[in-house]
Amino acid sequence: MTQLVFLHIAKTAGTSVLRYLSSHIPTGQIMSHGDFLHLPGQYIGQEVAARYRVISGHFGYDQVRHLLNSSRAVTFLRDPVERVLSFHQFCLHPNMQKRFPVARAAAHLGLDEFVQSTLPEVVEALDNQQTWQIASTYWYRDRQKHRHWSDQNLMDAATENLAAFSLVGLTEYFAEDLRRIGELCDLPAPHIVPHNLRSPTRLSSTDLKPATLSTLRERLALDMALYKRIRSERAK
Image (cartoon, rainbow, N blue to C red):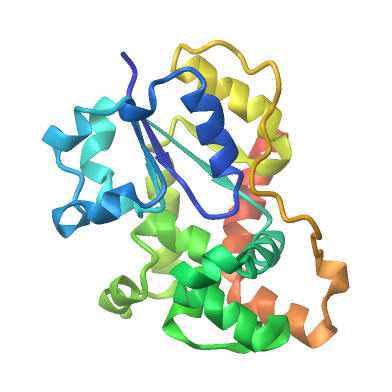
C-alpha cells in the first residue's frame, strides 16, 4: 500500500484532491486539513502515521520530513497573486470568520488594507506562504525562529525540499496532475475532475489598484520566483 503525504497549501485545489481520494479510500484512513493540530505537539509520529493511507494537512515540510522516506509526497502550487485573492474571498465566508482570526481581519480591513497589513495572522497567509510552507513551516511563531534566514536561505531550503516530492502539481494542470496522483496511489483515474470551494465571484490581478498589486507582488516575490521556476520546468 502506497502512503501519500499531501502538503496542502491553502487555495491550491487541495480540497478537490481530497474529494477524489476519499471517493476511493475510506475516510478513516485519511488525515486532512487541520486534523494534525489535535495531536500532542502537532507532531505526526510514526505510530500515528501508520494508521493512515493519506496524510494531508496545512502543515509545513518540517512537520512531515521524517515520514517521507517511506511515503510519496505531493503538493500543488498556484499563481501567488491569484492564490491570495482567492484566499481573501474565501475568508469572507461567515464560517471562516467564526473560526479564524485571519478571516476576521480580511473582512474588517478590506482587500487593500489586508494587503498592507502586518498582523501576524495576515503575514502567515500572505508573505511567501508557499515558499515558507515547503521550506519549513509558515506559522508566524516558526518564522520568527528563522528570522536570521536571508531570502536566498529560504529559497534554497524550499528548492532542496521539493526534490523529495514525487509530484509538484500546478493548479492550471489540475486535471492532469490529479490523474498522476491517482497513479501514485494505484487508484482509478478520475472520471470527473472535482472542483470544491471555488469562490463564486473571483477577483483577478487586473481588478486590483496598481499600488495594491505592487505591494502584493513585493510580499510574494519568493513565491512568484518559485512558481515561475516550477512552471518553466514543467514547460520543458
